[in-house]
Length: 355
Ligand code: F0G
Image (cartoon, rainbow, N blue to C red):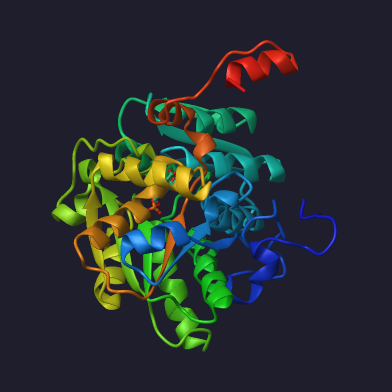
């Protein structure tokens, strides 16, 4: 199960010393973690930053950051003898849970909000052979059900309320400090259920304690305006946004997110769907980075703060959480295709191009 050719890659190998592993924890991997950190010269000026670095979490095996935490959660579930796992999801957690369950030969039950999960993510859950339950309700209701079901039945809950998920996800902060030689001044990140901002903050605090960073970044979380409970200070009963991954009205790690904000001197703000889609298009057209809409929320937030003159230089990292291939419908709606029909000959293509 943990067999990988060559030098073992993966979060459980690379970061064993900062994870809650024992000798009995299976060394599971699909090659997650160790994702690229690339500089965005095109966007840093637009944001009013000296340096903007993008952490490409879309390069994880199932195409999102969830794999970092899921590998730990599933390995620990298998260690404890679990034969099945369950999660509620807007799509990425379920794709990741389903993949690692398939790798371990255990059952996976996923609860997804009916009709609200992007097509690519559903395709992944189907391909990996998970048992999919489309619930008549939103993510928050699905998570409540998953919590109660896993308390009642012998099935491990692998949502980010499981501390092993947070432990795995904090490894991204370590990679960033390692790559830059210090923590960045700012970290921009989309906020949905708020597990990831909680995990990054934990990771940066541990990096400072271990001498891998001299300071902490200011944590800048961004919610979609139609699903911004932390910004509003109250639950949103009917969250709405084009960024379906973060369509969440009552984040489980609400407190973790506000602690990260307050302890770091950061902020949690809202970005509109238009601002998210502007960043989504800019990342594709200016940087060659095809992310899903939710992933663009961090960059959208930095662009907005930049426009308002609130960023004065410095070095920022924005986390790009998921791959654009997951949501082909939004891609088709947002990018006008430039397609010309041509005969399959040199002359035919030349004619079509007007050469
Ligand atoms: N970006 C993407 C692509 C996501 O899928 C999610 C969350 C987030 C950002 C927000 O992260 O929840 O830790 O604050 N997706 C979850 C899911 C809810 O079910 O896949 P968060």
